[in-house]
Image (cartoon, rainbow, N blue to C red; front, side, top):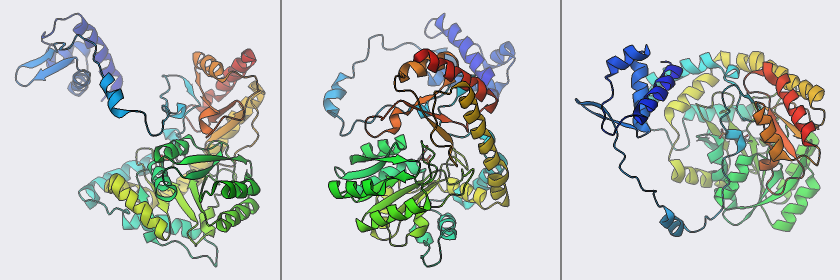
Length: 470
Ligand SMILES: Cc1ncc(COP(=O)(O)O)c(C=O)c1O
């Protein structure tokens, strides 16, 4: 089926409908097929779109007709404002990272890798096999498919040093993506109104999840080596918080990876305060110069609650993640998951497991993903150095998907974003990645998106817009 042809037919029929009276009968499907030189499937798709838009209606046996407009008056929803009162916590509008880019634009704002970086062949055959399996017809257990639980437990267990007890499959709870897992964890472990420590800057979605859970966020400044352990200790002491959310590996947005020494110190602080470290290992599969070193592998006392996502590396459409937690914390998280969504689609779990257990998966990570990410990162980095030298990148990320650039203090970020967009480059301001006031003007640039051949042009446009901005 051709999406472009169906859009073309929709556009033409909208014009035809605009010039018709309500109740007018549309030409038959057969006439439309001949008129637009399209297949019957494409014509049907266009008609379904117009039905969904409320412009036409089909009457079985009679044909398709222009809908009569039933309401000419503006609709009044103001009663809802009174009924709902003020929201418990005000969630901001969607992050710029989720914006759809206009066609042809150089998109450096998004958070997802180009589909060329996904294991497409493995995904398609895994989905076909999952569709034929029992998983297509049965309900999964709340904690997930046992074989997938085992896979997650085994993966973390393989990184666990001698002397530390590895996690069990029963410690694993499969999630429909880690985003909803974060909200669960904050609700379950922190509880509404209580303080949660978070690195700053940090993932905008974690800030949103904290707001959704109604917890009070306490920002802890973080640098290329992670947060200062003394500052973290002071924050635990002052606020009485018992939970710290962090990304020790290829953090979004800064790209930093905690050193071994920093990890040891931070774990000591967490243990000394009888606290949880919520480790968000979102970029585990995106190592470039180093390998990931999960902090959770060093803990068997239940201090580290480990969140591992497959969304961006397997497929954004097979949206599977897991949380590994031990002790009563695991029970509380599981209870929240049960109440929230009962279970995760078995067909998606089966497909994810299929991809992960194919020999081609490791080959894909090693031979395609890693070299591609390295080439794209270096290309964007070098292009910015040449064409936008005012965009200062303090950390060359050893993994992950993003560059985090500090701009001159006087930069007007809104104007910069608008000027870049007018010239065909979409960028995201860094402001949404700060739980409190931003400490300066930053932008986050994703090097894993489509069309790396346009990175040099993108950097040139950013450089020009920056110069004009100052
Ligand atoms: C740091 C971090 N955590 C979690 C997520 C959400 O992952 P998922 O798609 O598995 O919900 C993202 C997505 O961008 C992320 O960047």
